[in-house]
Length: 235
Length: 277
Ligand SMILES: Nc1ncnc2c1ncn2[C@@H]1O[C@H](COP(=O)(O)OP(=O)(O)OP(=O)(O)O)[C@@H](O)[C@H]1O
Ligand SMILES: [Mg+2]
View 1: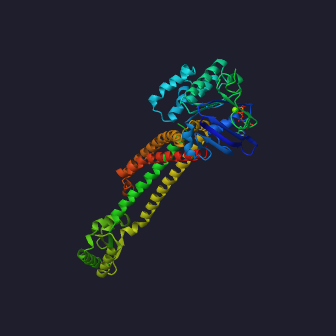
View 2: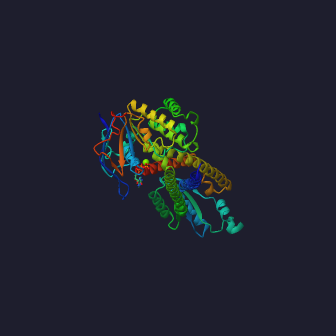
View 3: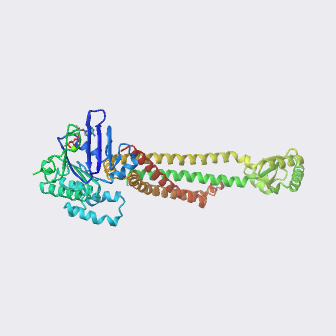
């Protein structure tokens, strides 16, 4: 299987502190589904930030879509970022935009003509159950609603890769399952999905998912993505 | 509408007024130049009226023969008497008074060489006649006018610089304020130019509103001042009348400043964004 992401001996240090991530090496297969787990502070968000190009590593090589991103000039970053959908741990909705406009943002940024924006946004909002909150500002939404807006925004552009940082932390179990199902559908359409989560309940919902575990900035099984439980031997 | 609008309004009010002052003064200086260019006056001072008039006639005859001279006219005695009446009272009209004869000359070519030739001609005819060049008398006035014009131009440039600086500060503050949103926009794949465009539009709108208000106020004040100057009936103040071109230039100033503000905002935003990842 072709890999969409390759990390080779990646290290990340914030400022002059100790390394937050050390010797991280792995490959992600195109079209696969991954969970990233680890204790709080293990470096999950940090690893994902490297993945969605919000951060450059202190050392090592990161190849994304077949290109070395460490040497990528700034002007080429937007093109790469448009191929990645991100659900931030803290949502990061644009406060002065309505739910509708937040969800439409990636399409507009990508220059999709306005007449082609409406239908996908409407469908997306219906899927995450926020049709009647379309005109609400983020500040007036509950935590779970904000999270669903963030997810809708991340997947609306049918990204090649979806990176989600604790995407179900604020929703009830039913909604969590629904959202996970959304990710799964996207995955079946070809999107590579990486979900960081503490929620071990979720892990069993996607039978084909592979798991990566971080411990104090190091990937357990540094030779590649751990399969836990192994994909085929799952009950 | 923010503080930006107010600052722009004040800036443009001051800028347009400065520019109007400069343009009005330049108009007056041009008029003065045109009036004085190539004008000479010959004074013949002699105690004896008969020899004075004879000398004046000799000079007039010599000048009439010169190809450098377009027009020669002796200032009539009655006109001189009128000019002198404030000092000499009714005696000014007395033919026996040793009032100099004045001869106005208009040269074909306002240059120095023609003036020198004519001065030599006059000296040849009457050695003690005095030749005055109007341009030379008025040169301090003209110099002062040019200083005012330069000062006005300097003020306009300073205002432009201050406007750009204010815009850069406003843009930086805006970037700081919207940092989280900008980060998100970047993560969604927005280019710097897309983000800059948002700020640019905001700042351009604010600046345009302020610019129009300030500029219009200044144009109104200028029009009122012009009417007042014209009503004074003073030739020098009246000559500061602005032409159509001047008015167009003044009306364009706010547009130029808005363009400058937009450009400065764009540059500031792009530079700041260039430092992020
Ligand atoms: N911008 C930063 N500057 C300095 N240190 C940071 C920064 N971001 C994260 N860290 C540190 O790096 C370590 C890993 O943080 P990270 O957010 O990646 O953990 P995490 O696994 O996502 O945790 P959680 O499950 O709580 O979200 C932590 O010790 C954190 O304090
Ligand atoms: Mg985290």
